[in-house]
Length: 454
Image (cartoon, rainbow, N blue to C red; front, side, top):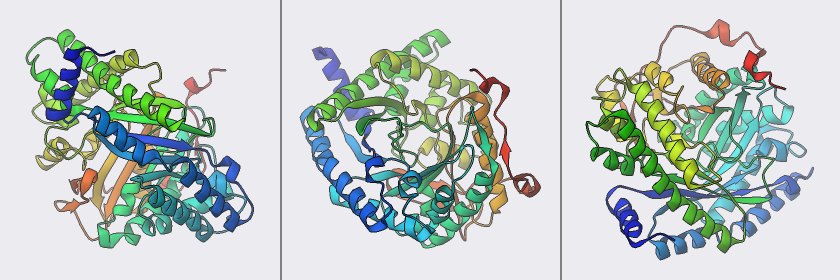
């Protein structure tokens, strides 16, 4: 049990350092909903989600009230829909009906987002996978709470470049379909390499086929807490710096463990993992870039940034795994541009470029996240950026992702407002030299030699 000092310390983190439980995510398997009749399939999906998740939001609110710990989001993830809809869906429009059913179910139970409108195509696409991917622009423009993700590569299988090429076109179509809202549909779509089955964060959450019928995963966030802790050891050596980050990450994870266990008990659903991620928000003081500044960088993007981020990510994980036996998901540091005020400041000061962000993704938790780019960029350029990021994940045996937002009608130097946790972003320049011949080769980039471990 926590002692009185720890109670006061946790309260101070919540009150003054933006500590929160970012999400309680209920993972739900839809495998038992599969049906060749599309109407029956949609009804089964709706019934299962609304039955299992009916108390999720109320339970989260009760825990927040009783323990005084902010729980920002309550979310649902489901089995990748290309697997569930394959028998019934014969066109992209058929898959869109499932997206609308998911959206209706999410609204009925009151969650913030529902993830899992997804396909896993690391080694190739089935017809169902292709139809789902082609349906993404329609699905995301006609729903509010549905998020979509596609896994196009892994260390074991390589990268499906046919899928990468197609997704470049799909991202542009999604931007066009939602152009009246500054192409916000793209903020609900992410492309992965080595996607984890138990990620509680959006837009990439889905419920893996190896998971139980239902599971509770919790995502904790505390960049502000880490920054405040580092302020107290300003100027000290690296050993002191690392010890401080580890101890702070331990405390943050314990808060998440408490919430996860309590939610699991009250909902009678097994506890899955704690995802300890330093996931920033647009709030002042809740920024990964500010932690990098406190470590000693004038701006994120300055020389030394990749080393500082590597150190931060490693120490966060070391502290987290000591606090919970089940740390998973994407645990580490996120570096989204629009959701992190310090990152936005670095971009506007010309300290941070797309190329430097790509280098940073070699050592952080995810990848190129929430980056606004000009709306007139070509589909092949988007595919090339995705391929670069997938290669980093494949070769380094880690999860990487891309969430790019080509904002139709806007260019470099302009700003796009998304609102809420998504924040705002300056539109970043993109290398305009062509990679079209590379992207159009077709086929698959083979897995690296170190993938052969059997």
